[in-house]
Image 1 (cartoon, rainbow, N blue to C red):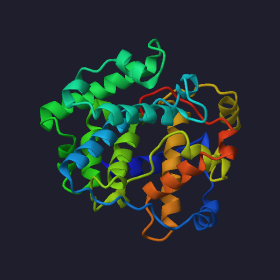
Image 2: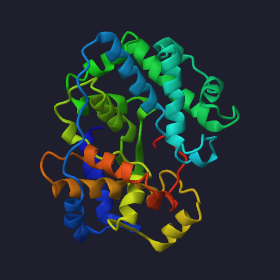
Image 3: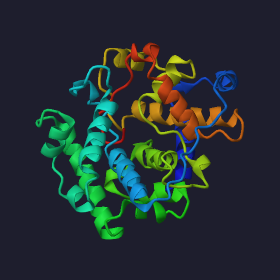
Image 4: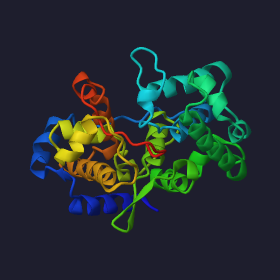
Length: 304
């Protein structure tokens, strides 16, 4: 499964989608309204210890960068979202005790994560997080000598190669079936490459090959901004906060049309702009009160 498949299959879905439509005539003006400056990569970290810790942080966090379908049911501190609640918990662990070792990850339990994240031990999300982290730990132990930075180094400066490696792990798998064909999204594998680049852990020569990171917020922003139009029945279901089944035609169309729409936006912008940069811009826009005030689609899955 390669990153090019994400682009090709999402374009295929967008061409035949019946519940979601890209308003293509709006793309040029919308693209022109966006800041043209791409997100800058972080300064490359030379110190081996600091680089190992940063690689550990982002691989660990992105291995559990999912659960948006459960986020309304989490205990959250005032003003914190579901994602920041999880990220805050992981950051506390790193600040107080450093990263988990590969062996510790391979043995981690849902109860341990529930305590760290200050969640109910009976909630199903911590156990799903633990399942993903155990898989990460096992790959680190068996293939990389327990080193997080070696995962990055094995990609030899290619974000695409890193994504394709992670895509083969259960902890980062992300594809759906649509009209008899697999549609890969690889949301968390791709955002891992972008996060490692932004943190200065890696210098990737091909970040421009990545797509946007197909979640439930960027499609929401694109809908409210008039770039995506959803079938009225689908909008009604979303507005009454009904869960949309992961892998259902409508959920695949939402994600795929968002991916392809961002590709069209990028094509209408200066050559230096990447889909990852547009994704980051739209994700941050989605933190605004206008976007927060309207429900977005929710699916319970380990993809996003």
